[in-house]
Image (cartoon, rainbow over all chains, first blue to last red; front, side, top):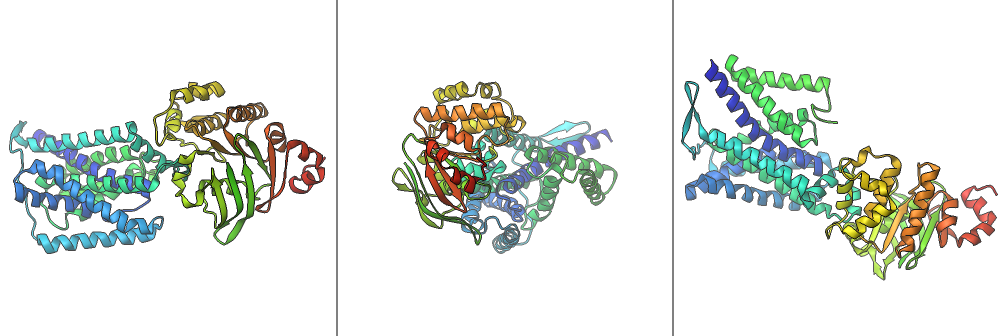
Length: 283
Length: 233
């Protein structure tokens, strides 16, 4: 029992940190560009699929982790400049547009990659004892990398000029322009950064889930739940909420079947929103 | 230095500026006064490119501002202090000053100059701007405009909603800033302040300039004051 609980808590934290990274990107794009990015899950999936190809080619997971998100960041760049820029400030149109992007990406991957799920071998096969079970060290590495990326993001937002611009644009877009901040460039890089983060989490998750063209669908829903419960526009609220929901689900799965545990976490979301419609950490 | 000629601006289909023409010379402190909704704020927004002028020309040091994207305008040397201060409420006072320095680092000398005008700003540097009083916010807003060493500042009702003592202090600071060589276009509802500190004053009515004169001339033209500003004399 103790070992089951320990594993559930560990898994909850690991998966929560991956979810947090995805939700951060989604929340950043919403806060800055006011875009509800339905394609965010597809970008996550694209990251994992690109990593699979990189690994096929080079056999090196870490190389894939370094390069696949950059490629997807490039896709994000093209999407922002080519499509989203032209429909700026039309929330409904952008929802439909990003939904279309999601479908297009899924079908493209289905054409190239096929419909069967693939697995990526754990790049760190070492396991360490956790009570009477063996826990894969790779999961700890995943959690640590995810936490490190978030710490880096915090430093970027709070200690760099570009980060300051981003925080300014979120609060008062027009005033930012009036101070000489190239707001469109900030939009573009925010979307690229969001796409990069989605893909990065995709590569991080790839060794512990199966990689297929639909893997982004459920993630997208989870990410939306996290952003809403954590408070739209509150990045660090998303991180806390992601870990919390993932823990509820993970620990719940010990006592009930996983689908019932999902019902628990959805019930938790409904409760939160009934009491605090602005989210746990929203203002 | 700044010259607007026959500028026409629209909000949707409603025309707000009907051929506004005015100019501010090198080192001048020029006032723009008029009743609510006559287009004073719109005039400043048109200069900053926040509301594109549909007709006419807006020239700054000979360059047509209408050819520049809005974010380039401040880089040419024009700072803007909007109505309602518009600080970034969740950034600290220091970050509010830093964010204006888009192209360079914060200049320590300029920072010191801001502190001499407003010692309060120095005490509040690490506080979130949203927690400041209205007067303090105005000081930071003016500081934010000064920190880039602009050749010209557009000020939109800097004394709005402040207590009389502060109004006087802000007016004196504006005059002091101008005394150091920065040209200023000052929008106000309070004619008295403008008469105290301005070189010239424009009166605006229904989106166009209807009167231009020195404070002394305006004082003499009582009918003008009565007609356009509802000032009983």
